[in-house]
Amino acid sequence: MVTWYLGMQRFVTEGQHLQLMAITKEQSGSYECIASNDISSPDVRIVQVTVNYPPFISKARGTGTRVGQKGILQCEASAVPRADFEWYKEDRRLFSGLNGVKIENQGKQSTLVFFNVSEQDYGNYTCVAMNTMGMTNASI
Image 1 (tube, rainbow, N blue to C red):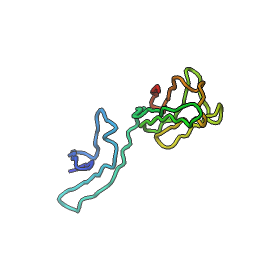
Image 2 (image 1 turned 45 degrees about the vertical axis):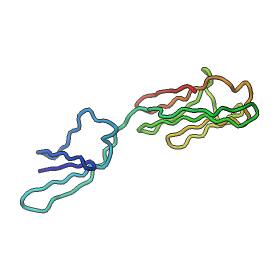
Image 3 (image 1 turned 60 degrees about the horizontal axis):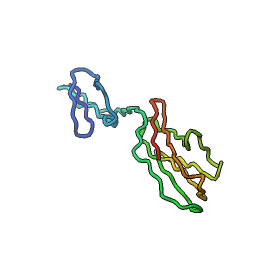
Image 4 (image 1 turned 120 degrees about the vertical axis):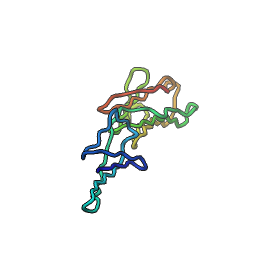
């Protein structure tokens, strides 16, 4: 008999395979496989399952900032593989180091920093998160 565990969740199979139908990202993790019979001690193996999924933006926010102050817009996206980020003002892509802005990407978070906010900086900004599974965006 072969028994599989994901945390406290138990799966019993007749053969050596565990088939996960319509898998979700919550089913990612370390699966413990225990094969046992009446003759010898159980054989235990760990199998790491990674579920790839497109980005989902969980947080998109900005700080209300006055002219002459430092301004920050933040975007956070969960994704596997990890998302790449792009920032846009209206339909124009922004690049770090140009026009007094800096883009900092760290893990699942991207930050757009304005060192000295001007009136021209006010407007609609879009954070785009993308990976090989898809893309999404949020406006700030």
